[in-house]
Image 1: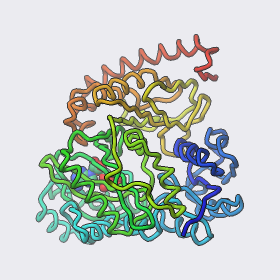
Image 2: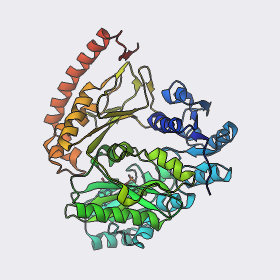
Image 3: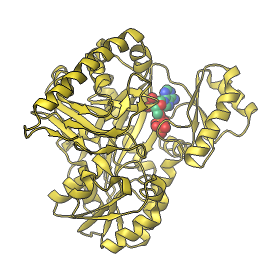
Image 4: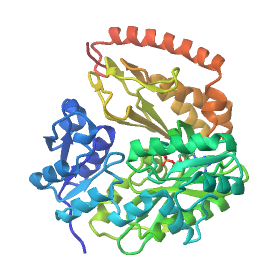
Length: 485
Ligand code: ADP
């Protein structure tokens, strides 16, 4: 059944709220923001046609409060809700409540969210459709003897993972049996406190791993397509920092096979709307399903830059009941795209989150440069939420040119007031490992944690900072500078 969407509440904040609203405006759809007390002065609040306070600062009393958000949505007259990523985006109860109150949830059905949100359940469902999963257990592990047996069977190293996992939480790498008991205990308690669900399971640790994921789109008429892959192997704490597409690790044959597996994984759970199927690719060229993210991903811009598509627009159209306007064969891509996540973090201190007021900010621009930012000079980067403040993406015809463009853009990026991941991202772009395309998820451990390199990079950063402050003072009156304080 087709139903035109006229007004959307965005149940999110920061860069992703802005990114979603931009497309909604292009489509002539009214935008409704919700915000916490801490976010009252943030750009996304002003950008919305209407904005409502949620009252409170903590995520659980604001962006995670289903009751408050649904009642604001009703009060505002919104006919649909977009959850963005994080917060309630993969909460099936939220999707259910939105629909129960007569609104459209811009995402998959509550059932698909629920089954893919449980990693053990997801493993069972997709393997039933012939999608390879990492060797390990399909049921949660309950006792130590069982864990010992499974680990011995699949062989160390193994990973202990949370069934309800996300963001790398509740995950432990176990090299040998002597570490097993404490790892199980640690993973279980971390999972319990992070997700309120202490169920854990065991997976073989894939060696020389690369994280390769496929963007998929599925409409309500049975059509499912993929928009190719994204490689997200540059990670810290099992969380992504740099992504690129195409991946240097895939041959055309492997790309085709994995794309088909991704589409099958989506079909296996009756998926609709945009989603991402994540795989781990071993150094032996074998790939396995990791999980499905039932929402828009942080790194979706690089797919948009290479395919020319607006994934949020497709999400809205699918939610309205439209058919996908293209077949798999009609989807093409061109050139190369890289994204760097700009987090407020101290890259020289184990990527510890940083907070504070942005005293000065100049974001890069130019041909093939896209900045999805949630902040402006004067913004307060609080400790309450995820420390990602912006995403910098570039596009160029060739990969080597895209890398040079990213380096140039990172150099142009001036942030004064908080430490950021900019120096780390520049380090990645300069590294031989990244340039050669032969890198794995061990990049940070193998290269960044070497003291010499860190010292070298820290020295450059100090110099950069001194220049930035001096430049900011000199340029106070230039319009491209937004300087406060
Ligand atoms: P989360 O949902 O917490 O993000 P994932 O299952 O998506 O957890 O895994 C996050 C990251 O952990 C992956 O991108 C990869 O770097 C690493 N990882 C996960 N499973 C494996 C595995 N079986 N072998 C090697 N690395 C893995």
